[in-house]
Image (cartoon, rainbow over all chains, first blue to last red; front, side, top):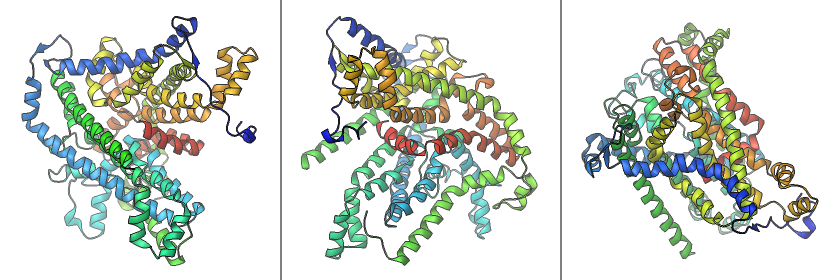
Length: 318
Length: 277
């Protein structure tokens, strides 16, 4: 399409047509958007209101519940399990952000400096493969890797003659949460949706005009100085984006913990999302679970507000 | 791009990258190797492949997870197609018409992007149960279609809006009904958008663990994620590693086929979808 009209530039995009109030066309439009809005109303808007409302109730999910005011919130802030879970998720987020920034960036820089996109392609493909493995398979494979008897990690350690380091990584109070949050070695490709950092960094690096590299060469700027003065500033947006997405996704995450440790041993690897799940579906305390959800949503909203202020400041600065 | 580096530098980079790629892929190669091993082969040649291949592992694993696999295929197909249809209907109305309230309604859809899943998990479960959908695949269709709508509407609307005005206008002047304009012009020209949305939703449906877990007490209705977890619990308990890894491989096949049949749109879909989500 575009080629044929190239002489006149890009074709003009479709105009939106004004539709008058109560016209047949307006009814048609509303009918078209109705199924989507109905689904969102029932499974998104209403649940938000219901969650906030029921967070003030002692509720088992079936009856009306009993209004208890701020009791759930009071309990939440003095709940030792919630304390453990909060500290764990903090460690989890910090570890995941660091992993998603450092290792994909390292690989992207190495690939970029090969100097040709033909050389880059096979690596792009290879590092994408782990993204396509179903999340559950990745988690179960890592559960096997950490297996105390037959797992790859302990086998490899004893193969190296470091068998003394071998342990039950997921069953050890000291290592469980770190084993879960640190899975995915060598971390070039992350797990699930925030695992594409390398592709994003590489695309940004390849978009840097070669004149800038020439200028660096003329001025004798190379190596670490070029990295910090030229490359990192020009891909800062991508780094920021990956960090942000990782924080938002990881704060809510609990399926990896659920599958690998169930929050154990004891509550050593508990995270807020899993605690919310267990509170509702194992202990039938739906009201308390709603309160956990509201607090988590508030933390996420605060982060989003902070982030948009940062954005606004960055834009007004330029 | 920029001038290439010196030869020794490039060789060193290639070496590091090959090692990184090998380490990234090794767990999955290990899975593939082990899926063909008998237990004896597993304990004797732990890190390396072994012959003869034990295809029986696959037969055994398939017998255990075929039901879940079939459930996941049908749930994914139905949810993705229904989600695309509902999203496309709304997206076309938003893209082509400016009707009273359209701005507000579109804003109401965008706002959903800001609602975290942990907040709605519990009440949405209660709603689904009270609708009588608990214990049926209908509950999963509802969850997955809803999940797919936001990305679907946003992406399809932006692609529809970029359609050339002349083309749409010309078809309308030729007397084509609006449904024909959509079916014969809009949809064929925005295929990449449909593909992107379909890929993102397929990944979501195939990978979701939590909703079937809380909604489906009957194990015969389970999807492949639940199936794998319970299969693992039994087979890891027996240390029957060969069949276990064969099951993992089987569960990975559909996404791999999707990936290799549409690598380009897959990669762009993955990145653009993740940015919107």
